[in-house]
Length: 57
Image 1 (cartoon, rainbow, N blue to C red):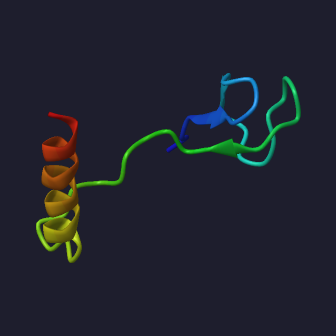
Image 2 (cartoon, rainbow, N blue to C red):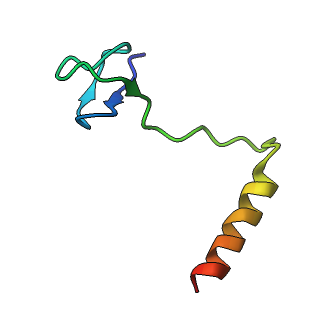
């Protein structure tokens, strides 16, 4: 299965895993991590999100 990558410099999407063919910049996987019911750090992430919401109100 081929994954889609995004360049950090020009924000173009590519199938190349090493470097962007347009500008030569580094690429990364723009997809979020898969959900896992056994998420060890989910409780901490949700608490941080609640705290950030309280500060933004």
